[in-house]
Image (tube, rainbow over all chains, first blue to last red; front, side, top):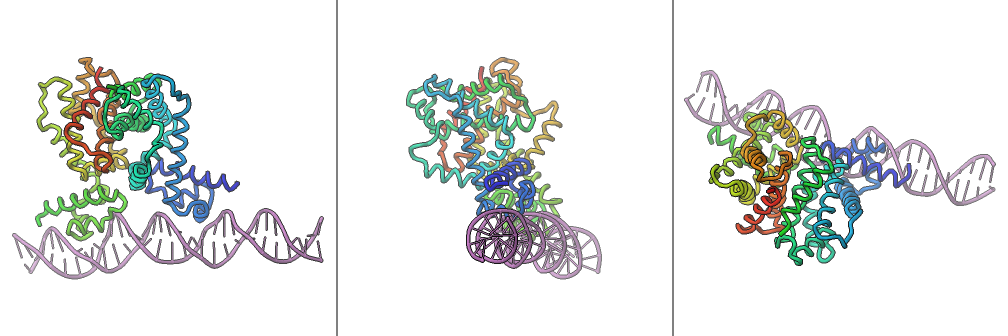
Length: 191
Length: 191
DNA sequence: CCATAATGAATGACCGTTCATTCATAGACC
DNA sequence: GGTCTATGAATGAACGGTCATTCATTATGG
């Protein structure tokens, strides 16, 4: 196994274990076992467990952003662009349940709070694809004039909640339902 | 301190510590210290830590339901009733941040998943005040015809997300904003 | 004086992390 | 080419620390 493969195996094992059992009950001993390496080897690739967890989150964020941009065109109407983003996110989550669970756990932990705080402080101009879209929508007066974080909450709060319900098996989503949910999110944002 | 007071002190200490530090870093030793009892005393009131955590959650759920029913009248128009429920919930959360954080952490943990699974299986007729309202809304054709869990997600997903942002200090909510958010939730549900 | 409640040191399990040791590999030298 | 040596990646037993839980002992109050 090459150096990069080993690093990848550790990340993958961490993803699987944290998604299944939560941050607790994902001890380094298990991560190492599942990755097919020794416990000490983890520390050749990551300074400590916190760093491993944070780097894995960054990896996932990159993958998510890539999935959202697929098929995204800036010249479509506003409503269509919004629905594309929101439904792409939901589709990514339900077809990548482990990634979803990891991201959710991360956000709902001291890691996530610290991370968001840093992000909000550091972020000035380039604030991501959604942010761009929302700002534009507010100035064009097509969506409600609310503080940016609240627009995020209205748009993505339901998505996360829906994805969780689907993954836990409490509802069964199909393409039609995904579309209707995305439209409902739009309804809550539009003026 | 009476017997009931001591039990209450343990619950209160658990609430505060879990809200502040998460389930990890809320060790029994600290809970005991903050409650003004010895570590062993906890086990006179609760079989073990899991039972303590679950009982505290049930307590909080009762309190939340009570807060929602305050001022709720069944003969108001549908939209008004919905907005009452949703904005009451949001108000409860932002004026009880520790309770909010606890409930959120609980839901986002193996405790919460097991709990919801039991709840969904055991629940047949009496399914709570929201459930009643949503079912009625669907048959009266005033809200979208979506599976019940999805209606919950659309209504409360944003509320939880907004409450978190407020409590973490990323936005500052006032009564006007709360009202507008509740109305936006309604927009996403209404036909 | 006794039953019951409360105590907190002791226990054992498990955690993240370290580090002395092993070992496969690759360059150096003849 | 064959032998020796240097390297550093990988290992996993061991360590210090923390946790939930127990239980022999002490305190309380009726």
